[in-house]
Every structure is written in structure tokens, then in C-alpha cells.
Amino acid sequence: MSQLTLKHLRYFEALARHRHFGRAAEASAISQPALSLQVKELEDILGAPLVERGPRQIRLTPLGEDFAQRARDVLRSVDELAALARASSGPLSGRLRLGVIPTIAPYFLPHLIRQLADRFPDLSVHPREAVTSRLVRDLTEGRIDLALVALPVSEPSLAEHPLFDEEFLLVRPAAQAGQPVPTLDQLGRMQLLLLEEGHCFRDQAISVCKLPRLPAGEIIEGSSLSTLVQMVAAGIGVTLIPEMAAALETRSAAVVIDRLPKPRPGRTIGLVWRKSNPLADRLAELAVVLHPPDVMPQAASAA
Image: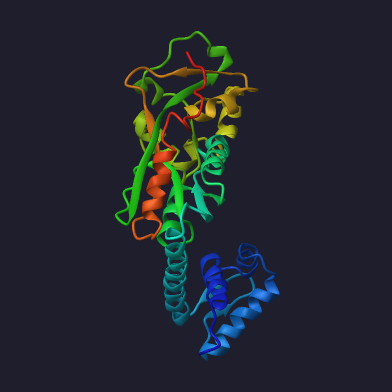
């Protein structure tokens, strides 16, 4: 058992997470044969199989499932020990694994990274884009240190710090310019284009417009805000986008953007991190530094 190393644990944890040798190898930045060799070596050390290998997918054995969870716990503890050392070594420095949701990343992340570089020159930011549920899981399992999301996430193990609020703007075809802006009740009866399942912004739009639950085939969806705006320009329907996205996504589209009647819907953008993270106090300081007006993105012009 003395041959067991953290490298074995990290590679097996990646395989357990991705359930695919190729994707796990890519995530671990090694070749697939090398990862397969490491997993086989781990099984030899333990004297029992961890993986059932099929032609197209793998399954973990019961031992593999238990071992994967223990491996995550060990790796998280090791990372927290490293964070503990960083917390006692002066200003925030080293690697910061930052998760960002897709409806924030293209519009706010570059500005945020510049702000962090100016204030924490020894900090190396490693961003990861994913939907909220994935980021919350990555946070709780120790794969990222911090996440930029729409609040609240309502996870007891996570601390939340709001940064700023922003409105949702209505995007309509350019032919509707000058027409009265619909109320939220009217909007709920229009052809509203939504993001795909899994995006919290989709759920927020459904809540704002009080949309009924519809069969999947009756909902027109897009994979990104850019896709939704282009569908609006084509006359397929209307959509809502966060204010920070308006300038970039509508600059070359034949659409008009409007503010909705008061009380205007919106969301709160903020940072979340594990309460148990030894860097929690430093991350709270970072969050305060990033509070508006220093980092508030420029609002798009709207009627």
C-alpha cells in the first residue's frame, strides 16, 4: 500500500468523474494510455478491480464507487492544506480556480481578471465555465476555489457574497421598434425563446414571466444568449438577456432592446466559496475589493 500516491488518486478521481478514459485523460492533461496504466497500477496496489471496462463506457465497481468518494475527500483535504499554507504567507497568491456561469463569463470575466491582476499580482486565475449546478458540485468537492454565479445558491456549506444587481432586458425584432413594451403578463403569452435546460437564467426567465410548464417540443431553446438574439433577429420570437450581455450580443443583430415595466426583473451576481476553505477570510476580502462601482460593467443603452 506504500506505493499508493496522490497521482493515482487524482487520475482515478478524474476517471470516476468523467466515466470515460479519453475525457478523463484530457481533463488530466495526459495521454489515454498513460491514464489507463495509472488506473491499472492502482488496482494492482489495492488487489481488487475498481473499474468495469466496456467497449464504449466504463462502470465503477462497488469498491470503485467507495474508493472514488474517499479519494475526493483525501484530495480536497490535501488542497486545503496547501490553501492553509497560502493563507499564512501574505497577500493572496498562487493558483485560484474560478468557476463562472456561461451567462456571465463572456461579458464580465475579462474585466474581473484584469482587476484581480492589478490588485493581486501574484495570483494566477484559472477560470472554468459551467452551469451553476456543476459549479456548486465542483466547489463542494474541492475542484474549484471560488465561483461567480447568480445568487442565491442556497447551499449550506457555501458562503455567498453579492457583488451587484443587474436588470433583465427585453430583446425584440427590429420591426417592433417603437411598439409598446409588453407587461410581464403579456410577455408570458408571447413566443419567449429560452436557454437550454440547466442554465439558471432559463429558470429565472420562466419565473419572471410566470410561464406554465410546457412539453419540451413546444419550447424553442438556444444553447447561448448569442443564439437566442440571432433567433429574435430572424423573427422567431422574443427573449430576455442580462444587462451585461446586451451591448455585445445585440451590436450586429437586427433587434431592439427595451427595459421592462417596473418592478423590473433582474438578478444578483455574486461570489460563492466553501466555508471550510482555509482561504475563506482571504476570499471574503477579495469579494469586498471587487464590489461596485470598481467592477460594475457598463450598462447597455435601452429604451
